[in-house]
Image 1: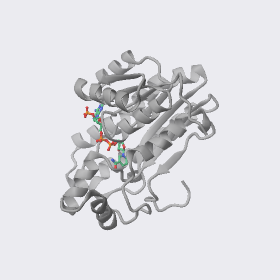
Image 2: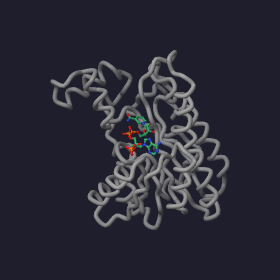
Image 3: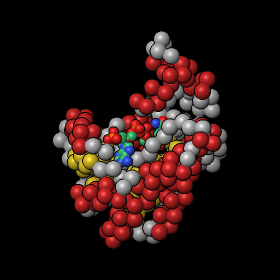
Length: 264
Ligand SMILES: NC(=O)c1ccc[n+]([C@@H]2O[C@H](COP(=O)([O-])OP(=O)(O)OC[C@H]3O[C@@H](n4cnc5c(N)ncnc54)[C@H](OP(=O)(O)O)[C@@H]3O)[C@@H](O)[C@H]2O)c1
């Protein structure tokens, strides 16, 4: 199988680092023109430069915009009027005592993790439908189904995204446009490495440290190691490709077997 996204424009939200940046690199490697996004000009341009370094000759645009706001969304729509592959990757997370999460925090999580993707999907889906081809993806999480007690606000937004994704897939039924969620499991990003280190200490080499972290704090994982961002990106690239034309309205897992379920 060869994944060919030549001639397609892909927008990856919240992609200045972590999983989003890995997705941007992978889509560029498959031939797509890629738009990366962070909140500042500096992080967005640094991400664009990173993709160019990893994928010589790649077409990359960095757009700075806070997608939790209407203005930020408008700036992206103006800079990138046509998108063929929309990857709603943006998502924030942090631990919090469930009884201490106030309304403002709940609203912020819904704005960033749910509404940012809803707004962009609403804007780009009609063009995809008119052209008879398009791909929308939401980067979900194992936390959508295994709500973490220490991050229920995060988990709930990821559960909501499953409904959002399935609903937009129905809106695009029979059009050649697919809409899916990718449920990522615990992934080796900078934030997660710092979190793992805070629990297991700085003494062990990283390979050993992550195994201890997984064994003691994420024992449900069948992979027994963190997932590398590229492993999420590979699934996203497949779903973005013409090869995945019969997969829509689905929640596809790249969770290292973390969710204890037989059906995807
Ligand atoms: N890491 C994991 O283990 C894991 C597991 C399952 C699912 N996920 C999901 O995967 C996705 C990516 O996670 P990650 O860990 O790779 O993220 P991350 O490393 O924390 O990266 C966050 C990115 O989002 C940007 N950003 C933050 N707020 C923004 C906003 N309002 N508008 C635009 N950009 C914004 C940041 O750019 P600036 O630096 O410019 O602010 C940064 O590039 C999320 O949806 C997350 O829920 C992650």
